[in-house]
Structure formats: structure tokens, C-alpha cells
Length: 254
Image (cartoon, rainbow, N blue to C red; front, side):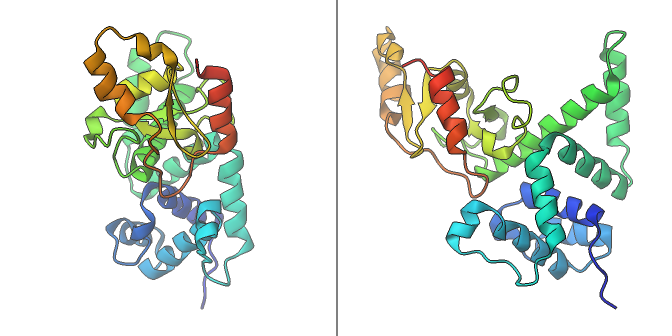
């Protein structure tokens, strides 16, 4: 007998959809097999569900990814739930995954955080923030293929999941992967300080202030050579135009 997907299973499937590249949405991928075992589904069923989610992504819609013809209403609802409330849905999905795996890592993290926090801090809120930030970093680095979008540096220790709209400026969108861009420390700092921005065509633009750098070789090698280049775009969760416009208008120093 066919078993309908539950909301819990779909939340876990969307969690995986965010974390792995489109090219891995198949029944042979180890992450797909792992989730299938956790929720007692076949790997092919999980893979089909991931393709269904991809068919709801505007970028993949433009590419003609249609998903299964019988993609359900609940698939769309889960996609929209995440889109409208990343903060809660990321945490809920990570807690569910933690429980399914019989893992107490989040509990251990809570104890560690509690030991380090000053009296009066809300431990559950702090742990939720840590978990969500870790998820955001994982997703952003993966969708940019573990490479800096400007310089192609591909050492994970030197990569940062930068926010287009700053964390403090928009609570609703701060964990939206479309508000993230993978940058190495130099370009993360330039972007954060408004000395670099990105156009709606994904071209790199630098502030004229950088022309005043006294070390002209640094300016040539790290700034000028990338001016006007197109960033390495992600394979899903493209930077949204309104996020980029906010950065150019509110953060960038021309």
C-alpha cells in the first residue's frame, strides 16, 4: 500500500534538498540513501522528492526542471513554509534530523553553551541561533561549490557565508540562502564594509575609495583584476535582486 508523505518527512527532505547539489538528487547518493533509511523510504522516493522541490525553485523552473507530475500540494506548502520562516523551519528540521539519527549533539551543544553563558541568557535561543547559523553556512558554501564567488579560493577554512542584507537588518530573510554569498575573508570584509557590491547582473563593483590604496600592486592584484567580473553563481538559491539592491543602496560606498 502506498504511504503518503508526512510533514515531518518532507521537512527532512527539504533539509537535504538545501544541503546537497542538484547533481546529487539521485538514488545512488549516500546522503539520499542515509535519509531514506532514517525515514524508511526508498532512495528513489527520496530522490524524486528532491527533484519535486527543485521544480519549485524559480532558477530551476527557468531551466525547465518540472519534477514529477504528481508533485503534491504538501510539497509546495513545505517549500513555502521554509521560504516564509527560515528561522523556525531550519531549526525544526535540524532537531528532527538529530532525533532520527539518535544523536545527542544538540543537547551536548546546549550544555556547552550553558557553561559559557552569563547568567540570565536564554540557552534555547542561543542554541537555536548557533544551529541555524551552522545550517546557513553549510548551505551557502555548498551551493557555491565550496569556492569564493570572487576569487575561486576553495579552502573551506578560508570561506565565509556572507550576508547580502546584514544579519541585524532583516530578521525574516537573514537565514534565507538567497541572502548568502560565499566569500573569502578579504572580499567578505570589503562586502561587509560597503567597499564592494554586486550588480543585478552579478557583476563585481568596487568602491572608488580603494583606488587610494598606497600599495598599487595590492590594488591591481586583489581589486582591479576582478572589477566587472561576474561572480561564480550558485546552482540554486540565486542572490535575489531586491537583496542586491538593498546592499547597493544602503551598504555600498561608491
